[in-house]
Each structure stands twice: as structure tokens, then as C-alpha cells.
Image 1 (cartoon, helix red, strand yellow):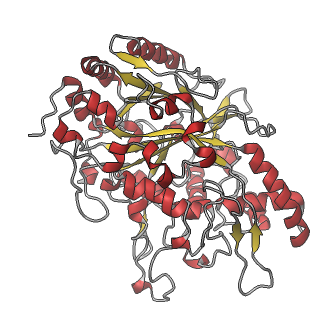
Image 2 (tube, rainbow, N blue to C red):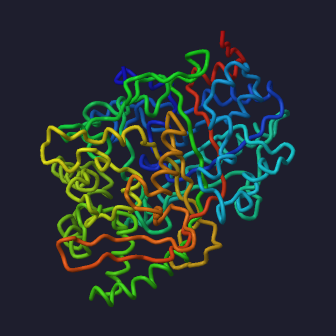
Image 3 (tube, rainbow, N blue to C red):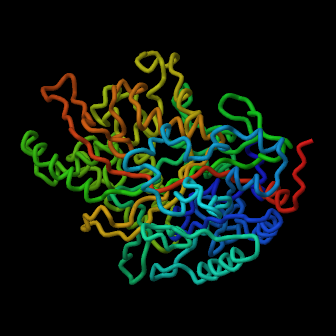
Length: 549
């Protein structure tokens, strides 16, 4: 079933992380619908322009150069529960949506730890006004634009044309384009953009680092039907699920697309009519502000002590502590492949040809592609069976918390492979990560008030079981990790006294290293829950023909 997905019916941002496909620029628009008829007309205007999941001519999707080129700008749509209600959907349909989606993100602040510096009072105006019940401020509709770039790194001209078109549509009677993005509260869209660096020939290229300096988005899940078989075989390693025989397989489609079989071998109940949610998914939008100055200053202080005790240089100490907190070195190399600073130096030397292969503008040779595939496996194809104590990668490291791989296997300690269950207890908690950084990239600027961070977009079939569980139970609790009250050193909510422990080898002579008094590195600046409908459902809503009987 999963291999026969109707890609024309599925929105493209579910299947693709656009930034990895050469779309480094994004704009996120929020709309308020005053009148149902106007909202339906608005959706009808957008419907023909929605980017679907149909295949493109791209190295990840096409080995035969037989597919159409990607569009210069993508467009995708999502709606809040209030938006669906304003569009006059039947009560029987509205009432059957999941509780967390009906609630919206704001009332679930304690689950999401949107408290303290992440509290709603600190959110951008466009996100906080609905919480304060400001008239005409409710968020009903999210429209996202992602654009390719010109050689100099600027967005293609079609981005501005699409923006002006959306503004004109949003200015129509019965619609309102919401303003209030950013700390100054003046923007009518939230910009996003990948870091761009010079290629060396006068052109710019995409760099996947976020503002803390780490390469991001490496371990996105792979699900059945997402890629053609020959591409799936390459990309599933390290991104799918671990089978009992320790091979990799794609996750069940139903974990990310509603109406398909999920990892429990069931098709979960959805709203009426039955096809309304089919091929759709849920989206959690989070604007996450990064306190770059706080992070760098804290690591600087910790590195002084670490360097003195461990007998290493301060630079080596800084990089090591950062890597231990995240679970990867800033260049993306996992600690499981290079646990120490010396290992990382050797790894970089061994794979020193990779940057040139990755950044090559022309076609790669078969030898270059094989070399790149081998490097990609090093970056993503690992398990935690050989590091159960956390000597290589600390138990509480960010990437280990976000995807526990085989760590929750109840028979992990068994030496008999027949006992192993792989990642069965982790498979139902995976999320697709989308979005891009926002703000100016200025690593030397340590002003925390600078407007920069990450637009974090999570997509999944069940917000409670997947997104909320990962954020609450894995990022902000320590039960599954035997980590006590410790939270994620990067994304977690850090109360006074928060710490992060770097485990030591029980067979060695070193003691664990504790990073005390973790400050708050990341703060929420806004967010909401959305439903991403299929193209058929979007058309049903636009025509006003949703019938639950």
C-alpha cells in the first residue's frame, strides 16, 4: 500500500525537507478568516499552486533524469482547528479531531515547557495576540513559501511575486494577513533562511549549520513510499527503523500520513468523512530563539576548567564539550563515529575529499558518488548497543534523546542476537523535521537580543504520541534514560541547578564530567498546531462539500 502513494494528493513538504533540495529561503504567512465564504475562495485560489509530493529531477528522487525540474518557489497550506471551524466544517467532523489539535499549542504550555522565558508573554505579537483574545487575531491558516536562490544567494524573483500575490489575496474582503512577526512586531511574514557561504567561484552555496554552529537536519526519518526503491535503499540506513536482525527498514507510512498502516499495524481512527484526513498530517510550528551569546559564554567558562583538568587545549575543550552536549561535532560527524577530539581530527583527514565532492557543480562520477555514499553512512548509520553507558555519546546528549534508536530495546544487554527487538519502542515516537533557521548569521555577535534562531516544524500523524511525547518525555524528563531530573542540555527547560553529565569509561581512571548550572539556551517565541490536508481534502473544504454522513 505504501509503495503506491498518490503523490499528487500529498503536500510536498511532508515528503521533502525543502532546504535539502536547494530551497534556502522561506516565508511563513499567517491569515485570519473573517468570513467562511471568503476563506473558501482564498483556498480555491491557492489550490492550483499547492506543491505536491510528485517526484522531481533530483539526485535523491531520480536516477534516470526523467522527471520535471523543481519549481522555483513551493507553496503549502495548513489550517488550525479554529480555522476549520470558521470555514463552517460540520460539527461532527470538528468534534472528532484529536484533543491536542482542538486545544491548540498555547493551552498545552506545561507539556511543552512554554513557561519562564519561553512563556507566552515573551512570544511575538502575532502569536501572543490570540492568547490575549485580541479581536481579529486568531490564527486560522498557515501558508509557507520556499524559494530557490540565484547564484549570488538571493531568492529567485518568483519569491517576491508570490509574496505580493499572497498579500493581495489576503487583503480581500473577509480575509486578513496577520502582522506582528519579529521582536518589533511589524513583519507580515516570518522569514527563514539557510546559512549561505561562498563556493569559491563567485557563487553561493547552502550550508546546513544553525546559529549555534551545528549542522542540522541530518537524521530525518525515512518512511515507506517516500522515495523510489533505489533511493530508499541508500537513505534508509540510520534514518529508518532497526529490525531485530539489525538491518534498516523504512518506518510505516502511517506514522506520518494519516489513513495508512502505522507501526502498530493498524490504521488509526480519524474524523468523518473517512477520506477527510486521508493523506494529511499534523504540523507543529515552533519559533525557537537561540541565545547564542549565553551558549558561547557558558561553553567558554566550562572549557577553561575542562582543558586544565583533561590536559587539552582550550579550543579542543570547547569543541569537545559542544559535541558532547549535542551528540555530534559541529560539522555533523557523530560521536559514535568519532568519540574524541583526536578521533574527529583523524575522521576529517580521512574524508578530506568530501567537501569538494559535495560542492561539485557538475555531475559526480560513479566513484565520487560511492565515496559520498560511504561518508553518508558514517554520518548516520550507527546504533547505541556498543555504547550503553554513554562513554562515546553521553546518555543525555541532544541527538540521543531525540532518537533513541535501539537504546530502549528491553533485551539490549543480551549477547544473543535472537533476543534483540531493534528500535520497536522508538519507532512510534518519530517526527519529520522541517523548517529553517531565521535571522542574520553572525557567529561573533554574542548579543542574545539579536533576532535569530530556528523555525522548527514537526510533522507527524499523532501530535500527542509523537511530537509532545518527544518534547516532554525525552527532552525534558530523564526516566527513559535513567538520567534523573536532567533535561536535554540544548533544548531542555533549565531550572536553577540544571546539569549535564558526560559519562566516563567505567574501566578507565577518569571520573564523569558535570556541566553545572545550565542556563536557558533556547526560548520559544511562538507556535501553533496545524492540520496539513491532502489536495483532495483542500478542494472539499474550498467547495464547502465536507459531508460527515
